[in-house]
Length: 359
Image 1 (cartoon, one colour):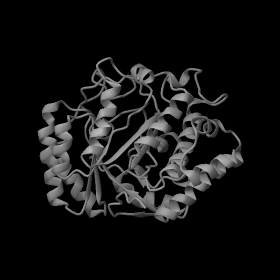
Image 2 (cartoon, rainbow, N blue to C red):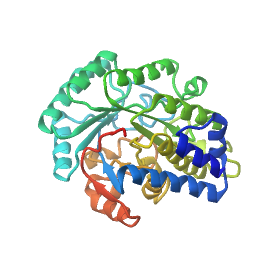
Image 3 (cartoon, rainbow, N blue to C red):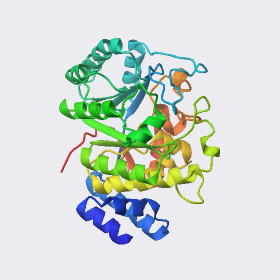
């Protein structure tokens, strides 16, 4: 098994059956070697610098009805909101004063007619903060809108494919959503020169180890600049509210929480070794699942954290899953606490744009 880690570091890819073996490996020495090798690779590329991105959750309004998501359109138990442009700019200004040089506008998937406003907002932010990177995470848009957002100043786009298996995708989404269209959108992001990000939910309902291997192979081929690996956390107002109570774990003898944490950290390491230059967040979902989630993600090879810049009054409303961490070290105002956490494991925050730089 340790030979597989060495092979992945050297050749930057494995056979599908070898990825499967690493994911299922329970040998603590091998797992420690996997994480350690990935961590060394990240340090070789980036030093012990961790990039921070200012996350602004601009709306929890969504036209989609994804079965796992707390802001799905059929959820009547949440209070919907839409930040005004001035509120978004105030978040950017505060973030800029704190040293943030990347802003991430994230939200539910709005109707097509919202794209003109998004384009204008991109242009305004780019004009006021020309030294900053602007990332969008706003779902599936038209090809023309992706082109216009890019021209208006957006430089990165995050669109997790969630699962590459068509049948698995269909079990997580309503009929009107298309697996093929999601992949087409990812192709459009590459076409228009975005630094593109994709990724999966780890431990999502009905997911098999074979599904995860398919996702690894897809990401190996797509070669995104950013890779987001969020462990699945149920939301009380969705079809899968009680999923963690089910006996359907991928890893024998493990709770859903345990397997998701372990698999998420293994995947961070696998992708660091596969794509050494990539930008890989230690996600809020991981920090929600584990008290020391950010630190463990970094020690597995991650190099990005996304503190929340959203107004405190709306953070609880952007509830993709239950108990989402958005205060303390997860927030922009908790940056000192985050610095302290990372300092304890020998890392430090850097506030530059942290662009993808292939070597």
